[in-house]
Image (cartoon, rainbow, N blue to C red; front, top):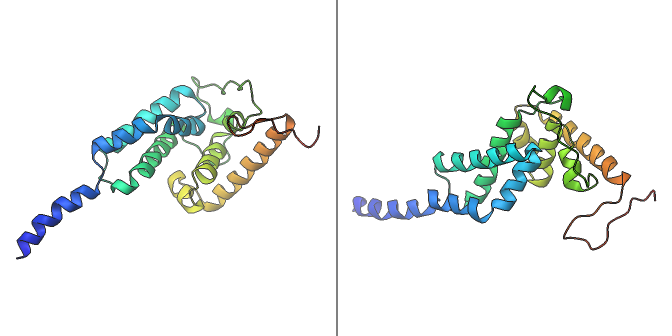
Length: 188
């Protein structure tokens, strides 16, 4: 009696989990969003590509995940890969974060766009902003993944908001595809 129930339950449980093909499909179907996430986290096209591929590899080789959670798991894998690549630390600015072979990102021609402004943030502030604001991770989740205190996350998010507000108020800016006319700063 018990053995027949177990035999039926095992196939049902296996159907609840995402297969490697399911996970590969998520990376294929959401390549633009996942690459954009990687780019915003790393502010470097080459690192973003490596981050994307590392996230895919992590998903394919990682522990099983429920099918319903597969997309968020893919995003989390990209975030964890970016954290490994960027190694953001609280209080570290661009000059401290650079290695000999790493340079500041080139200013984006439309530096007044939100994407351009985000890529100009210091690594820790940028990663915290993307995780907590754009991806809606809690302060506690951010602090756990970044190995820092929730207070350091809060301070970094505050600095990021201040720097973004300052950068975006200096020139007209727009959100491509969302608005027809650029929004002008109140100063002009």
